[in-house]
Image (cartoon, rainbow, N blue to C red; front, side, top):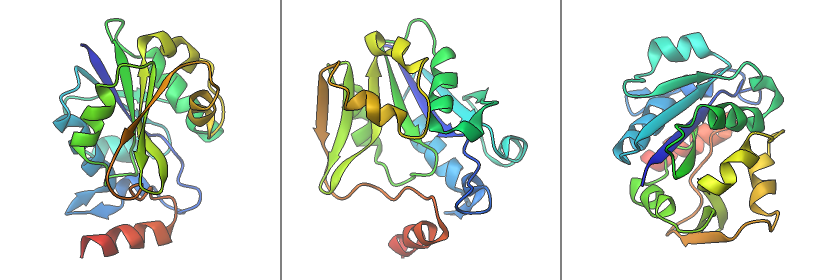
Length: 191
């Protein structure tokens, strides 16, 4: 099975006021941690979308082994990053696994379990709700070309057009860093 991993890192970090991808985390950056996680999953292709702070990300994050995809419409929401990445997916891909660049607490074992799901869509079912990573099978990829807005992948997931596997994952949804308070909670959890 040929799998493409996508790390979404194109956001402008409007709520935080500085590029969250570059926040210090474990001696490197937040995005380094997520890219390292993605590398450890053994994807056949690994895409990283950039937009806001693209130059600084390229300068400061180790993107070795990644195909960097520039999203010129990053300010229009996450849907544009998914759309941009979907167009760069290798035609051999059986599925795409979507990770958030600001969510380093996801475990590689859980990513692999989502990637192995046999349905067109898969999502993690954490103790407190659904969350990333998501899996989109080959038959769903064309629908990613038309996504718009911030919650576009969720709308596709809940559309009822495709079977969805909920992969049971222990613990709460990992912290997604959007605000200074989220970042502080992430760091506090490391203590």
